Amino acid sequence: MIRFPFKSLRYVVAYVFIISGLMKITSSELGSYFVQLGLPFPEIMLYVVAIIEIIAGACLLFNMATKLATIPLIAVMIAALAITKIPLLSTDFMAFLFEARLDITMLVLLIVLYKSEAS
Image (tube, rainbow, N blue to C red; front, side, top):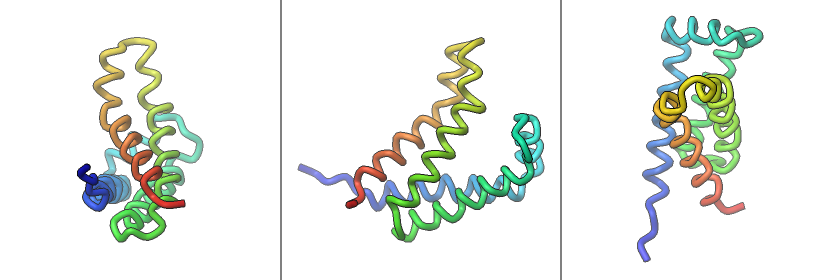
Protein backbone atom coordinates (compact mmCIF):
# COMPACT_ATOMS: atom_id res chain seq x y z
CA MET A 1 0.00 0.00 0.00
CA ILE A 2 1.29 3.46 -0.92
CA ARG A 3 1.32 5.97 1.93
CA PHE A 4 -0.06 9.37 0.98
CA PRO A 5 2.58 12.11 1.35
CA PHE A 6 1.03 14.13 4.17
CA LYS A 7 4.05 16.43 4.11
CA SER A 8 2.97 17.66 0.68
CA LEU A 9 -0.61 18.03 1.85
CA ARG A 10 0.55 20.13 4.82
CA TYR A 11 2.56 22.39 2.50
CA VAL A 12 -0.39 22.97 0.17
CA VAL A 13 -2.85 23.67 2.99
CA ALA A 14 -0.30 25.93 4.73
CA TYR A 15 0.21 27.87 1.49
CA VAL A 16 -3.52 28.49 1.07
CA PHE A 17 -4.01 29.75 4.62
CA ILE A 18 -0.84 31.85 4.84
CA ILE A 19 -1.62 33.62 1.56
CA SER A 20 -5.27 34.02 2.58
CA GLY A 21 -4.26 35.59 5.89
CA LEU A 22 -1.75 37.92 4.23
CA MET A 23 -4.32 39.01 1.66
CA LYS A 24 -6.82 39.83 4.41
CA ILE A 25 -4.26 42.22 5.91
CA THR A 26 -3.06 43.80 2.66
CA SER A 27 -6.19 43.92 0.47
CA SER A 28 -8.64 46.78 0.98
CA GLU A 29 -11.22 44.81 -1.03
CA LEU A 30 -11.23 41.99 1.53
CA GLY A 31 -11.55 44.55 4.31
CA SER A 32 -14.61 46.01 2.61
CA TYR A 33 -16.01 42.51 2.11
CA PHE A 34 -15.72 41.76 5.85
CA VAL A 35 -17.61 44.98 6.65
CA GLN A 36 -20.40 43.98 4.23
CA LEU A 37 -20.87 40.63 5.99
CA GLY A 38 -22.51 42.36 8.92
CA LEU A 39 -20.20 40.80 11.51
CA PRO A 40 -19.75 42.57 14.82
CA PHE A 41 -16.46 44.49 14.91
CA PRO A 42 -15.57 43.56 11.30
CA GLU A 43 -12.12 45.19 11.34
CA ILE A 44 -11.12 43.30 14.47
CA MET A 45 -12.58 40.05 13.11
CA LEU A 46 -10.63 40.54 9.89
CA TYR A 47 -7.34 40.77 11.76
CA VAL A 48 -8.19 37.94 14.16
CA VAL A 49 -8.99 35.59 11.27
CA ALA A 50 -5.90 36.75 9.34
CA ILE A 51 -3.61 36.15 12.33
CA ILE A 52 -5.14 32.72 12.95
CA GLU A 53 -4.63 31.78 9.31
CA ILE A 54 -1.03 33.00 9.20
CA ILE A 55 0.08 31.47 12.51
CA ALA A 56 -1.75 28.17 12.09
CA GLY A 57 -0.61 28.00 8.45
CA ALA A 58 2.99 28.52 9.56
CA CYS A 59 2.58 25.75 12.14
CA LEU A 60 1.42 23.42 9.37
CA LEU A 61 4.28 24.52 7.13
CA PHE A 62 6.92 23.80 9.78
CA ASN A 63 5.14 20.71 11.19
CA MET A 64 4.73 22.31 14.59
CA ALA A 65 1.65 21.21 16.56
CA THR A 66 -0.07 20.22 13.32
CA LYS A 67 -3.07 18.65 14.99
CA LEU A 68 -3.54 21.65 17.25
CA ALA A 69 -3.09 24.08 14.33
CA THR A 70 -5.87 22.44 12.32
CA ILE A 71 -8.51 23.09 15.00
CA PRO A 72 -8.79 26.90 14.62
CA LEU A 73 -8.53 26.54 10.84
CA ILE A 74 -11.42 24.07 10.84
CA ALA A 75 -13.40 26.61 12.89
CA VAL A 76 -12.53 29.35 10.38
CA MET A 77 -13.71 27.21 7.48
CA ILE A 78 -16.96 26.24 9.21
CA ALA A 79 -17.63 29.91 9.98
CA ALA A 80 -16.81 30.91 6.40
CA LEU A 81 -19.24 28.33 5.08
CA ALA A 82 -21.96 29.28 7.55
CA ILE A 83 -21.67 33.03 7.05
CA THR A 84 -20.88 33.37 3.36
CA LYS A 85 -22.00 30.19 1.60
CA ILE A 86 -24.96 28.59 3.42
CA PRO A 87 -27.20 31.64 2.72
CA LEU A 88 -26.85 30.85 -1.00
CA LEU A 89 -28.78 27.62 -0.44
CA SER A 90 -32.03 29.58 -0.12
CA THR A 91 -31.67 31.05 -3.60
CA ASP A 92 -29.50 28.89 -5.82
CA PHE A 93 -28.19 25.42 -4.99
CA MET A 94 -25.76 25.31 -7.92
CA ALA A 95 -24.34 28.72 -6.94
CA PHE A 96 -23.80 27.35 -3.43
CA LEU A 97 -21.97 24.31 -4.80
CA PHE A 98 -19.76 26.49 -6.98
CA GLU A 99 -19.01 29.17 -4.38
CA ALA A 100 -18.39 26.65 -1.56
CA ARG A 101 -16.06 24.34 -3.49
CA LEU A 102 -12.78 25.69 -2.07
CA ASP A 103 -14.16 26.01 1.47
CA ILE A 104 -15.41 22.44 1.45
CA THR A 105 -12.16 21.16 -0.05
CA MET A 106 -10.06 22.96 2.55
CA LEU A 107 -12.33 21.74 5.36
CA VAL A 108 -11.94 18.12 4.20
CA LEU A 109 -8.15 18.49 3.87
CA LEU A 110 -7.94 19.97 7.38
CA ILE A 111 -9.94 17.05 8.77
CA VAL A 112 -7.61 14.62 6.98
CA LEU A 113 -4.59 16.38 8.48
CA TYR A 114 -6.20 16.38 11.93
CA LYS A 115 -6.95 12.67 11.78
CA SER A 116 -3.54 11.79 10.33
CA GLU A 117 -1.62 13.27 13.26
CA ALA A 118 -0.87 11.10 16.28
CA SER A 119 -2.73 12.15 19.40
